[in-house]
Length: 399
Image (cartoon, rainbow, N blue to C red; front, side):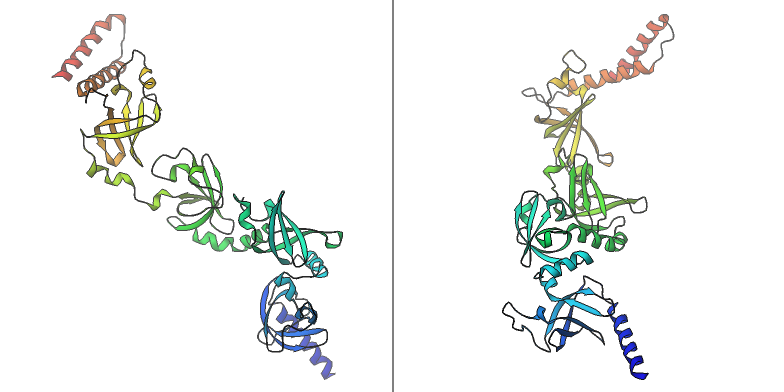
């Protein structure tokens, strides 16, 4: 009775030891014995695994290893004991082993040979497989040829016609890995953290960035650069690796706002010392509004040339017809408010110098219009009273 009990105890201990390893895991071990059909590998402690001797032979049937050599192999089973496969780890699996890997959901190693219509041709051992374009990565690849020649782990998702028709996915394995690591990544995604990520997609409003393990954040177009960005795709592209700063984390970590410009100095910090009222600076009109034109004086620093500072044309919006977006010119600095990031400007008319009188007259007219709008006319008989008030305001202004 003692011997069977010992055998059961030995088997039970081996079974418990085998559970330390997961199917699909690649491990290293030392060969301790080579039999006619099976070899035994020490994988640490009292644990031993076995694998077919055929997997230790070369194409001519000669053993490639000896007792005492260390090998790398993949765990294909941990039920009742540990079973390894060296060929699966090296991408030299037989059709039978590939079918076993398909049924067990184990990863196999393959090399991307070339780009074909709709995806890639992958070489797994002596077999050819197809990987759809969408299954080679978790993000869209801008240059499909970048994967050519790379060796990756794949999962067999279709096994047809005895292995002649194989479809594989690398994305399935990457997504599983992402889920396993997502909790750890989220612990790092906190406000003010500086992280490295990869652009997954670019839209007109910004770009989505993968921070690792599938955790994504939004880099809004307004946070990309201190200067105005009209087309995010001119700065970023899918697959590009960038360093960003976490601005906010909301909704339990599900909504992450990112910034790129925050990693460089704000150009407005130097405005107070380098700009002065009366200066004339070169600028470029970036956009128009009903009330005036926004002018870029340097990357990240914009001023406003009010509509009233442009030469009147007889129409309320006539000034904008002479100030197209993209126009460059000389602008006088009328006012500076660095703390509010505001600079008032006036276009210097070519050949006329700085017409401060014209600017003041336009500003005066604007003030009178505002004053008139605020004054309530109670009856038609009050018109004279209103006119008197306007004249009085004008006289006060000119004194």
